[in-house]
Image (cartoon, rainbow, N blue to C red; front, side, top):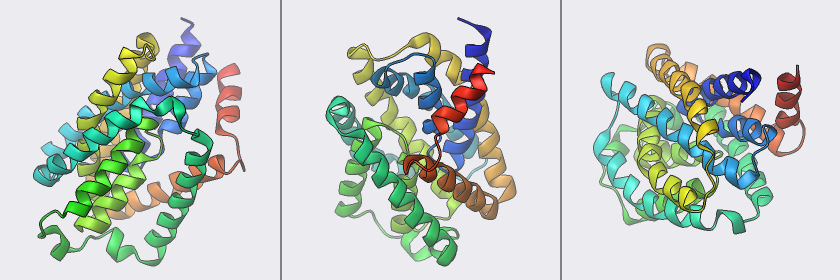
Length: 262
């Protein structure tokens, strides 16, 4: 393996870990780099899960240490997400990825508008909702979110944040903590499916984890230290970047490719 490939994987991993811990959509970077390094899309999708797994181990540990992780509801909602993730990963090769990407872009923009126009509901949380018991509809919702997460992972953070912040009433800091816990729990199940189908490149995946774990650690610390306003603007920046790529306005893969070639 060339040193340029190693550097590309580690640097992209740092960006992915940072973005995914604070917002979502970071996998667009790692998937782009993995495919530019020669992996088929399905193998890149499976390989990416190694970095995602380690990234969330780091983030969950950090959020828990800082006492902002609401474990009980996160664990309960992870149960339907696991079932969904297994199904999603099993049918990953059969779903039209382009359609899903456009759907993510639309949802991201809607969420950004909501954050800017009605920030008190999304950013600061709603205490009365946090005290309510989970409903059957929330379990159903997280089952379908799990299906999508098992399928491609890209943008899953936004679905989870919407379900947690708007449905459970937590502020962005606690929402992010619960988000990474749920992803941590369902990811091994999706990863096993990709491993069984020989769609994981362990060399690239393990190098990628060096960066994702570092990026997620930095992000989880900044999220608590800087507060919800910092997280808010990171999310907006990532949404703008990711959605413009998904709509074809800019090509992040091409940009990353030109950087690697240099």
